[in-house]
Amino acid sequence: MLRFSTAGESHGEALVAVLSGMPAGLRIDLAFIDRELWRRQQGYGRGGRMKIEHDRAHILSGVRHGATIGSPIALTIENRDWKNWQEALPVGAGDPEKHKAVSSPRPGHADLAGALKYNFPEARYVLERASARESAARAAVGAIAKLLLRELGIEVLSHALAVGTAAVRDAEIPWEKIQALYARKEVLLNCADPEAEERMKTEVDNALKTGDSVGGVFEVVAHGVPPGLGTYANWDERLDALLAAAVMSLQAVKAVEIGTGVGSASSPGSAVHDAIGYEHAKGDGRAGYTGFRRRTNHAGGIEGGISNGEDILVRGYLKPISTLRRPLESVNFKTREPVKAAYERSDVAVVPAAGVGGEAMVALTLARCALEKFGGDSMGEVLRNFEGYKKQLKDY
Ligand SMILES: Cc1cc2nc3c(=O)[nH]c(=O)nc-3n(C[C@H](O)[C@H](O)[C@H](O)COP(=O)(O)O)c2cc1C
Image: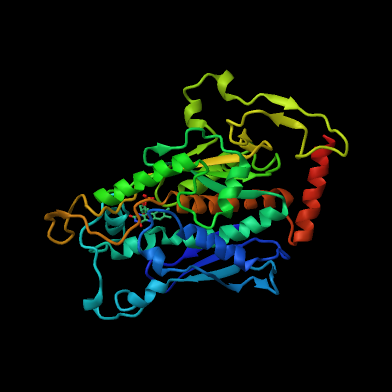
């Protein structure tokens, strides 16, 4: 089974990820992994931290001569900021005077719940791990999952649907426009609609001016997914459930929608369900896995917990960033006196970066389901199984 875990703290020496279950013989493109890390660092509204870090994946194991060897892949991403924190967060006992306590919990952060749970007198260790810096490790292993999916003709990208109250007017963005966003040298808000992107930028400017923060919505699109990943057979094997959990696990994501799930609840069935047609093969055959076609994709590519051959659409709804330059009321951990919440350097908007995290989680989930269906210990075996399944679909 494809599995991963991460370790590492925001101001620790490095982030760590271990990915196991990758078949042998997958070519690893290091420049591609680093570009995914770069994408996660971009976006209008990011704070000063991302100017310090230039994330690069350093692979320690599981890859030799440019390809996977079937054993667990371990990698690290250096935290450049560590040099400024070595005395404040030493692994050894260190000097308690140098500790940088977070003396009042910040509303919207894990600070209070984490301090109570782990019995810490203040929140420093809590925020070190709850921080979304961890999502860099996910972006790195997600990039490896994307390399596997590419071999199967599947691409996973994201785009912004909303930042604060500024939303794209036409939420149906063609795949080519999302691909064009990926090619951009400057990410800005990663929105395929230039007019909406300008309004999104104004939302961020207003938040910057007023010391506030904004949330938003990203959409992850998986293109070229064959029908048949996931199953209705058991609750915990449904693709929609797996994707929802995967994307919800990202910091600040508070709701996940598959296709137009939210709007569907208040629409009549005739306006929601995607009518089915069939295109007979012409000439040398047909594009796509089968001849079955939909003109709409409200289902977001999943019916009955199974991919149906349309693009998979997963939306992540982000709450506004919790750290505020004009902090909310809080209480001092020690004195219990009312104070303003502590302030740590922060982003004010992160929709594009969260979208890259969402892509990683969707790619890891689809790669897991694809390996469960076409499984094998080498890429040759996986591709052979995949080709057999493609033929089965063509002959259907
Ligand atoms: C890419 C990304 C970057 C983030 N950067 C910040 C930040 O700079 N400041 C902040 O307060 N929250 C930031 N967050 C959100 C917090 O990490 C998150 O809200 C917090 O850890 C509490 O967890 P929860 O919102 O999942 O409950 C970021 C989230 C993401 C996805």
